[in-house]
Length: 415
Ligand code: HEM
Image: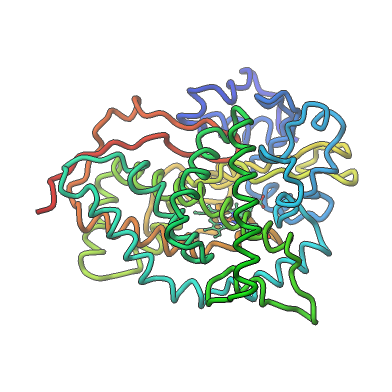
């Protein structure tokens, strides 16, 4: 068991913490690696911060993803899952279910959302990336969250799913509502989720009658031992692909660019490597950015369905467990010099995409978008620099995700 600390635990979930949670996580890893705390929502949960415990918890079948297993307290306060929960059918998605349902649905989606489909999508991602940069390149300044990191993933996932171009701006608005108010007021988010739900139901209906080679048509077509996704399951799947694939990728691009602009030597190395047409440092670099300051700070909720012990601490049944990926990925027991950014890091089994049966199904797409976004931006706007003091930038301060609200930059305008 870890020894009792002399100093009190650093405050969690304050604005200072949101700007730089890593010192607090280091303290927890050292002194209270499995730590019960009250979240800003009033719900009590366990934070797991050491790599070895985090990896084990992510793969532990006694930790359910189904919010029905949460103890009374959370249901009373209504703070389980994401806002809009009353759209119950949309919420029965991969991140809220356990085997055997999870196994069946994941197998079906894997048949449609293949690495090959993602690889074939590369030219389209490149085109979207260039089009977005075109919209501000001549200006000499931009907010890279609003004008680049935010729209890219939403248009990419809409295209992949088969949402027609004329409807994609609606998705952009709904997604904007979710990202802005993810942890805050519920009314607008619930409305956005409801609109998305209605839209997806109609779209699935249309694709069933007139299939294309998009992912939604693929989901409808996918079968396993004669089983198909029901209409509700297909809608929930489309929703989670959008929802899980959106803010995460915004933050991979946003946090990644921010980190690179603050680390000129590493950035210069990457730019030289990209200019030589190499892909290796870009690939290891994106993994390192996921480890160093990844988009998913805490893995999504898990609930103890049987008594279990994590790192020697007993977790009562019904208690929520939050695995702190951001803390595990800076654990000196696992990574050499964990607080140093090393884009060439080779041995890098980071948990940024999770681990176990819920491991991110969108990882190939996220890597593709992350690599294209960073490489294209650094090539076209090579002298890109922050147009704010680092301390002036605001972080979102949500519970699960870590990301910037804005990223103002300046650069020599493109002719
Ligand atoms: C699951 C991270 C992009 C779809 C996860 C999990 C993590 C993660 C940590 C596991 C959560 C847990 O176990 O609690 C990320 C990061 C991304 C990213 C860091 C971007 C950099 C995407 C994209 C998509 C996607 C682009 C889809 C288009 C999903 C889905 C799951 C998931 C559907 C649930 C899988 C399951 O429960 O079986 N992701 N993700 N993600 N991700 Fe991603």
